[in-house]
Length: 326
Image (cartoon, rainbow, N blue to C red; front, side, top):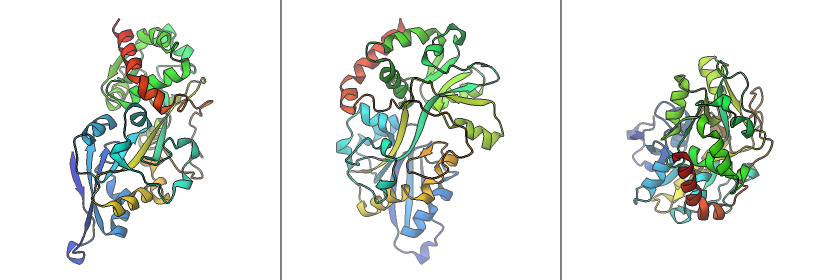
């Protein structure tokens, strides 16, 4: 899907306008909210942003490998970084506001990818159907949750890949297979992408779905509903860290750098929680104030190194497929 984002500035008054092409995913930017979020950047830099959107980060990554005409890539995450080789696709750039990024989000010291936002994985619960949520991975394996769990397939989704890596980080290479065998009967189905899983959850097809811990805020603000709860198992949590990077064939390097800088400024970071329903990457006061989100007792995001994960992920995935198909 392509939609050019045209500034409100009269073109006759602005004969020369730079254009920045941004490859992104639809959960990062969509037609209804781009103007409120990015029009200020366009005006200040006398430019036009053109967003080319993809359904998820996996499809975005596939497009990047086909020699696209892109300047900025907004929406790849640490899971893409840990399961693929991205270094040659981006120009390293440490943005002006890098010091404001929470230290435990920086997984790439060279800054080929800059953290912009992040979500903490959790199990989203329909409280009208589940009275006692699974607060541990152990409880998740209980037969009381038979046919109640939805999540995206790790073959097609970063969420699914993250869930698989999360399980390996928690149970170890020798133990994750037992976990998946134990919850196999509790899985209602896997889907190609997260949107499909969540739509099935909303339709009442299953009462538990993998998702970010901040999702209940969406329903509180948009629907005035408190029926959705998020639960992070006490054994430990896992983060998906969304990033931005400068494509190595960018035709407008200076403007690309300014855009990365802008993404870390308060005027953008302050919009993230209530437009993308995830956390901003920078240290902003009151991020959690007034919002009751579950906290991770332990962060398992970097339990496995990027090098180790890249070397072994395909084998882990093959084993998962084998377990699910038995």
